[in-house]
Length: 79
Image (cartoon, rainbow, N blue to C red):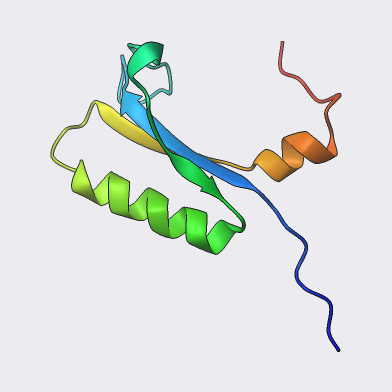
């Protein structure tokens, strides 16, 4: 019997950014939280769908965050 794959949580969210080259969002209260996914493949599918649906607006950006990395190393913080 094979063991199930280790759960690796991923978060997909997005919204309007101040600069299309950056990731600083204009309005944190109105972020679109797409969801939390159990693996990279499902998160990537969700990210692609949302990104493609908003391709005509350069100031809307969706990101995929590897939550499992933050959970595995909670001491890692950016200043």
